Length: 429
Length: 63
Image 1 (cartoon, each protein chain N blue to C red):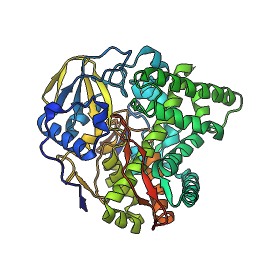
Image 2 (cartoon, rainbow over the protein chains, first blue to last red; image 1 turned 45 degrees about the horizontal axis):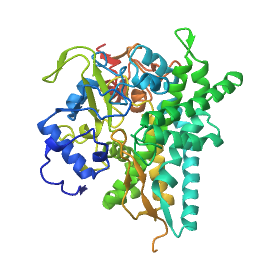
Image 3 (cartoon, chains in turn yellow, orange; image 1 turned 60 degrees about the vertical axis):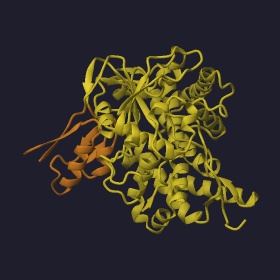
Image 4 (tube, rainbow over the protein chains, first blue to last red; image 1 turned 180 degrees about the vertical axis):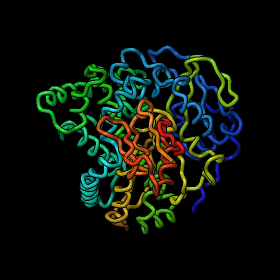
């Protein structure tokens, strides 16, 4: 086991602002030291909301950093709802709701009914049958990465050449998105989960327009596919979305579009970040990397530990539907809570030596796929498969993969993303 | 022991199928089916599955 670099000195919590995008691009050691201090000293710390041009500033939010508090809130969806917005701190403006008001920001019973349309496509049994397809995608991506390296004196980028194309191709295959549309899917999901990172959107001062355009682009793709599938049904998820009835009715265009966008974006970005952050973690912990590479028997626990360690989705939001008290904290109807999975995943009350990457950790009740409650990650079993296949293939096919530079971190609080991770194949220079 | 499943609470997360594939299956309707209500030898895996169900849709009754 390897111990993380010693965290920086005491954290001045009064100087911390979780709404500051730039803070999230800073070093992870500072981030995790801050989470630790919040867990110890201010488990329901209050923060003012980030200012987004064109959106009224809301009342602020509580950052939930302790595992037990996060679980208590997540497991009581009637009291702490998702329907007022789960993926953004401000309430979602009406014009964006058409594209982003999907089941992730919906409550039961509607949420459960819609989720069940696709849940059968994401079960362990069904995904078992997909494993050959996933392996074929991974083999092809790694072969191309090798070729790219040969053409560039060994240099590749872990994000662009490995981590991004694998989940993109897997989810697009499942959805039935044609080859020629996949670059669009990648580009638009980058915008949607940019967190407003100025490198990824045209005008830093107008992220809402960028999100709107990205949503329109993907919804347009959905409409074309929907029309095709209604005429010629296939066995893909898109066909299920457009043909299944809930309560005797087909889904509305808005529900279909937002669900389509959710599946594409969530299927893409989360696994991408687990892969590239996982490669980085193994680079920083070479002894753990060697253990895993030598022992496929570690795949099961190692994948869970990579998800705990990287926490690809940093938070989801819940909103109180009434006044009450949770674990000693009194709250009012309308109060917003940010469930910081990345903080709960290093809570020493649950994880022994939480700052240690231990690929054999077992049990590992991490909340990297969400905590208890109806919104537990739909794609968890798919992500597990993709990660196990990818890392095993990396060890076998690219054993010479070596990270050569600093990661370029996404300036987003919502996903723990990397934009670039320079690496080389072939050793030497 | 006997397994009880609440089909209204189930969202088909597949956690139970992941932990005890012989006993649970998410059906075509996206909701859990209990393949073997009296799991016998799979008891330990079933207890895990019941404990870890994210929506608390599974329970055990003494038989």
